[in-house]
Amino acid sequence: MLTDPAVKEAVQNLELKLLEYYPDVNLPLVRQAIEFADLKHGDQRRSSGEPYIVHPISVSAILAELHLDLDSILTGILHDTVEDTDTTLEEIAKRFGKPVAELVDGVTKISRITFRTSEEKQAENFRKMVVAMAKDLRVILVKLADRTHNMRTLDHLPEKKQKLIAQETLDIYSPLAGRLGIHWVKAELEDLCLRYLKPEIYYKLAQLIAKKKSEREKYIEEVIKNIDDSLKEYGIRASVTGRPKHFYSIYKKNGAAAGQRS
Image: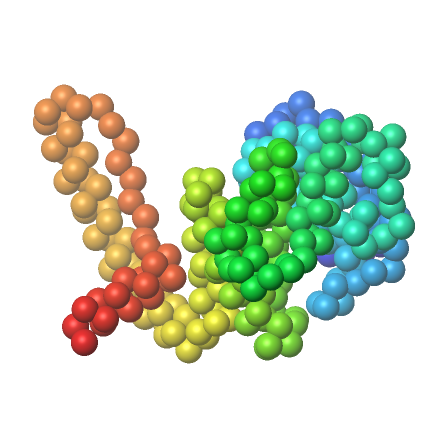
């Protein structure tokens, strides 16, 4: 599968992201993990028709954006091998070290969580269970990266399943990202959830925001300049940045405003 164009592109993207922040990264070991996972996943394909290996490589690329260590990157590549293939943790430990095997084991256990009572199904209790089970914070980060890539590629699933996964993501995974301070992941997950749970609102917002993009950017630039000038006037050294609100944030704000008016 490694000769497939989609796989080649995913590998190249991962390596570029790694080299951006980790110039001395052990790329031969990363490639060895990719080859191992590719062999194990064999002819498995995703709902999109792409070779399955594209998914774990893409998960590792997200972990690279989070500037995680090599063990986390390897775990991203290998995270589905124990759950979805005949791979054992002993094999992973032998080839890639015990710490990687322990991380893969942690991710696998979270994926296999089952609920015994209706109380356990509540989102807050599930989040607590995930945190309690993850002896290493990196397990949760790998799981968040896994969910982020799954949300990015949700198009190819039936609508009913899209909504179920989006609601679970909104209830459990985006709040987890927020609590860990990974705001760009939280924002992306929330926007993707809105896209699948309330597509009419999402696309209406997208249309309105696109129309006003240049206007908003000009306004942000003007505000930044005014604040910057005032800071310099008082001899304060600081860096001022601005960012537009993401879709879900606008949706929630407008929803709250509408509630106050009614």
